[in-house]
Image 1 (cartoon, rainbow, N blue to C red):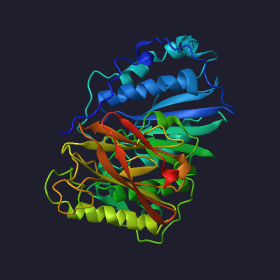
Image 2 (image 1 turned 60 degrees about the vertical axis):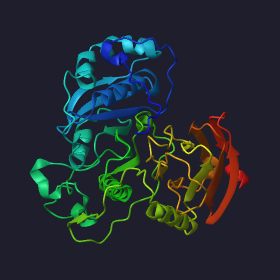
Image 3 (image 1 turned 60 degrees about the horizontal axis):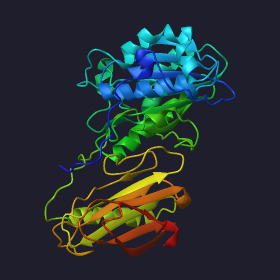
Image 4 (image 1 turned 90 degrees about the horizontal axis):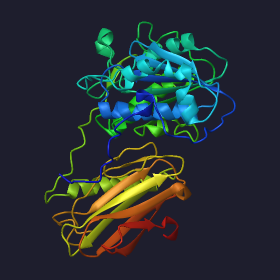
Length: 416
């Protein structure tokens, strides 16, 4: 298996052990917000909980304004773990405030449990959450909800309506009398919701994930809330500026049924001679972008005298902390479809043993927001790289040379 760079796990979450050395001044936010952070009681890995705990500390110490109210909720029971007002002062003073220190044992139990069960789905009973948030509301501040867990509905009492194996509800399930998705609960006016899924790919296929996300957006919309983003970046979960979703979801006239998205899970990268199907998929993505001016597509393929030459696309989009790359293929702003391990014998040779084409799509057309690099992960020889860009419905390409001594090569997309 291809060995890549890996972020080291956080050894200690300061909010759990009750200390912090961070003295940075908090960011003042006006007006105030009331925050609800929802954590499943099972299903999340320890390292994921540790990272969430660190960002929860950042919320208390820096992100939230003084007098903001923060409530920690356990899913799927939706019971309140703790609720408190954010104290005045910098991060160090806030985390040492008696009101915050008094709830540390409860926080420690959530973010540093003795045992975890990752064999189950980290459930969030989304249709029921609205009532719990409204019941726990303490102020007239605007409401921000941060959810961690699976977007797939999973409830033993309604096994026939669970989302699994490509199943998802039709829009008609929102108005069906006995549907688990048709509940009376409503969020406070103006509620914004951000959802974090700790794994970048959580469904059978990206299109299936899109269907589930669309349904969840529509459900929340009917419950008086707005889903602003779905991301695997824990830090981005607490960011409500520059939302991923800005449009309104229209209700389809459909019967109340569970639909099935018939698709096979994406295969792992195959190191075999045949690449014809994957090449066709790349062409389909590029052609589709030519028909949709709201989408950007980007592809690279390369050749080198070093048959093990391994290049990687890295892409950032303004307003998002996450980077799209080999280890994080699906992001809030797009998707990388393939990570290639070897160079081809010649560019655009369909019979090459390792056809070197990686391709991605961006779900917006703001070229100025994108920053793209080609990283030389491994190579002892120069590489000739063909870069294909589809922007505003027009396909362009150029060929560049990359030296093995330059690890990060920034692409000037405006120069195409």
